[in-house]
Image (tube, rainbow, N blue to C red; front, side):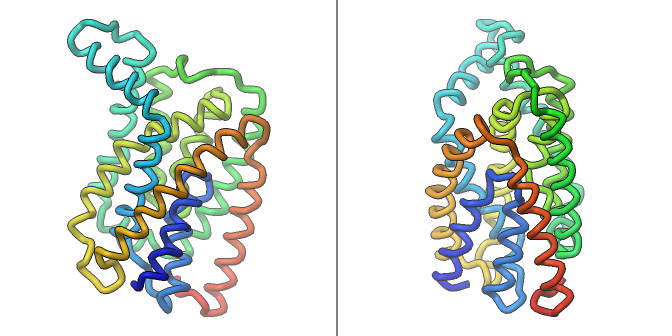
Length: 274
């Protein structure tokens, strides 16, 4: 991987991580186009996500700090565990368990067979349809994050775990589940951001050991891509939260379906290797 490729992939990661269109799919597809058919790899994808997730920490720093303080208070008895912020801390922890367990159990498949582009095509289209249905059903939802229950937290955690498959989209799966459970678009989106923090940092830090192990993911370009992903990701968070306050997710559904069709054609014509 050269520096120009790292810049492009960093921009792609930052632009797509928080939109319900699957950043891992985009990095894989664009990476193959840039690298003569070679996938930049799961390690590169996981590590650059540290940049976008750091953007979440910075953007939601006040909310995250409040949640952490309340959660610690609930451990010492100074704050009731029923407190919304303390409960949110526990729900993020519990909701992160499915993706951690499944990520470790299926690590080899995630790094290899599940990165097959035909699977990505199927997930782009399939989850796109799920998001469309969820958005229509949830158009008039009114539930806020403070109403999040333990059952809902576990369900949302299971939905997030589906994003281990490229093409699903962590935010797309979690937002869809949130809409089906009755939460409004902003609440579902905000929780998707918060829930991703432990999983993404855990995955990225775990994969640090693999960076530099092959020619396509050297340390220098990976760091550059991660920094760019942070800057662009921060801007995308601010834009998306404003956008969904007055718009639905239909544009992302059509984008997913269109991208699935384009990738399928590129595979069948030999431009991309599945």
